Amino acid sequence: MPMYFFDVLERDGTMTHDVIGVKLDGPHQALDAASRTLISVLQDEAMRHPEFKVQIVVRDDTGNEIGRRDAYVSRSDQTD
Image 1 (tube, rainbow, N blue to C red):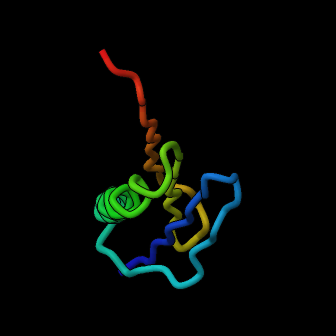
Image 2 (cartoon, rainbow, N blue to C red; image 1 turned 180 degrees about the vertical axis):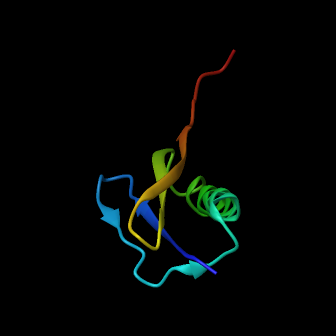
């Protein structure tokens, strides 16, 4: 079973590299896992930071990027 790594591009532009990885059946499962992780990050960060961007870069065990998942949150204080 191949290993996949999930690097996180922080809102300040720094990249946190996953050095542990996870064994998964294939790239589709890795991208699904990245999407689930992104949802968790959104739930944790959205209330603390009115605006932020996060990106998860998925790599395979050879170091090749297989895809990205990203989100941008912007809170508007405008009233109608």
